[in-house]
Length: 191
Image (cartoon, rainbow, N blue to C red):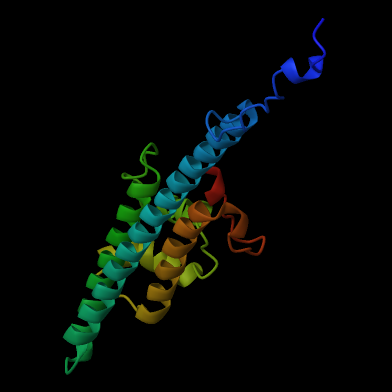
């Protein structure tokens, strides 16, 4: 028999390989795909909001351009010529409102609406709190009249508010402006 220690014949203890970075555990894969899905969702939502904000700014710029043209053309004009230019401004504002409505409600048939039906459409689909009876008559009947008393500043403010409320309600439905009970604004229903 050998007098040597039998333990010396044993192999040394081998430590396992250190845990590598790749491949990650299944939980990390799930987290990665959830984060990717959230990033895609956030990017799409941001892009949609950006497009709406851009369309809103374009519509407001069109409205501003009409008001600037009215002010420039009305300078040094007689009251009769200014009244005629005001009626052109009413038609231009009405055209901007209709284009915005066509952009936001493509599946509704409102192109043939006129008079009280058009005013009702405006009141139902945006913040029309500034649309009083005088402005309502101006929008529905004034553009066809030869003479009409028009408060262009109030008409501009009403149109600006209606356009802004329409787009802002679609961008952030939970932050839409609150209105009194007299003006309905179910804009977020159509967003």
